[in-house]
Image (cartoon, rainbow, N blue to C red; front, side, top):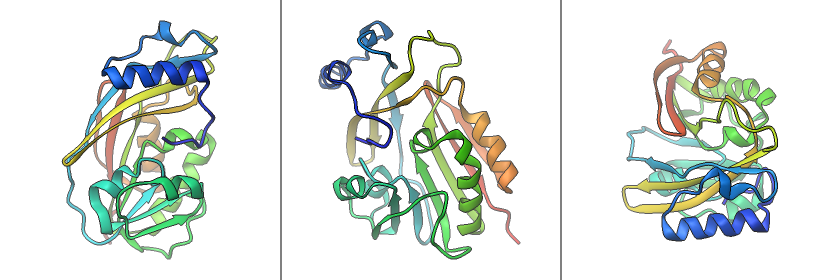
Length: 221
């Protein structure tokens, strides 16, 4: 489980574990202990996707979802060493690195992925991360993003939110939960605007129930 943002309280953690074990979604009423809103479970089907060459995976620690999916094609970076050490799968490399200051050369990758990681990065830093992703991708390179859709309006007493996830890969299923501070209304439009400002072209964006996926491309020269 990603731990970049904060530790889960005992009350919320016990509720989440019980829900994950039973397969049930937690209601907002279950989160009244403390100030955490527990979102209904997100159901995410992540099929294999074509990718040539190496894949830079931002926030590849924790469950190492992209590393589990694409194996030796993946160069996984994360700000926390422990997250990388605990990540399953077999990526080619695991490197402690800040996404705001990537240490790779220009045009080093054909594909970059950001799976439920922007939610842990301060919104004021998102622009810099997009600029770095644009720089390290080759012309024609692809950027794939998955992230939650934060509720636009919510009781002010909730200062944080926990998203239980059920992730279905072709050969594995992952049940986990990602918790962060509340970011009211942050959704796909926020990232589309930032990606375009960094120079990317929008290929596709799809809002699902509680989450979204988007694909961008660096223009080919």
